[in-house]
Image 1: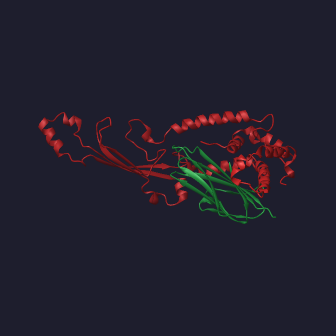
Image 2: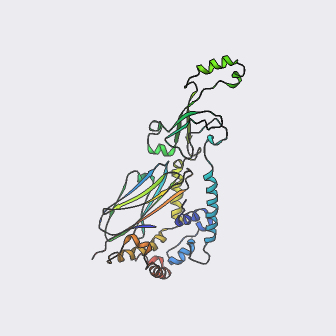
Length: 112
Length: 263
């Protein structure tokens, strides 16, 4: 399920990954702008919150995939003062079978 | 466990050579591209069934794997324990004061897992590449006379020795260290680079960009609809016009060549 942000003015969006009570997590991220792949994020990209410049009237689709074993992983996107997040809590074993596919769409406001 | 459809598609493309060779080119329509990639619902020869079988097998194997713990401590009766189990809480405390265990003993055990983490693992990279899992364990049990010795003593001698036994005459301190790397153990982070390479390769081979171009059609329509009064971005998934919207999108998908998109 996609978390939609609509009528978003130009500004910054922030992507944050948090994990609680878990061991380790492997992260991959993808950014599509107007349906075209713009960039990929790897593990180290998520060491700090990713700040993304959002320009109107574009469409941004953020995909963050997390593979992890235990604990709980949350992907949060904060844009224009609004915050949405997707969380998956893994099962108790640490075999790395838990997969979180978080998708966010930032649809900027169209010119009048 | 939640394996999304997109992941199934990606790994299908990676694991099945027949699919790995199927790629979209710019002369295809989006529909024929999806049929080539085996996207559910597109094309008569869509390998949906194969995908489902593969997912079921994967689920079965995952289930077996989930039940298999790691570490030497899983061996029944073993005195050797591992510092790396599937779930390592920071501190474990076991108190048995009601003599409920099989040997009728009572005692107290405290385990500290990865108590020296700051010293043994200095950076996040080191934590991910090589695991220094360790455990400091302190256990206090009620002290008893050694049974073979006890059987050789008189009642008076046993009574005297038992009286001399104090509360802390049976204390054991142990330290366990389990090194995990790419070739030892089951630490996910040790395989971070490999997983990233596989993931990126699968993503590229599956050519998911085509799928996201189609998704962008939906986003584009939503972007236009968002300016309407009463539009609620939190109810997009439940919107009653979604069926009609999807029909319109399907029509576009059927006729618009890949190279003519994005709009």
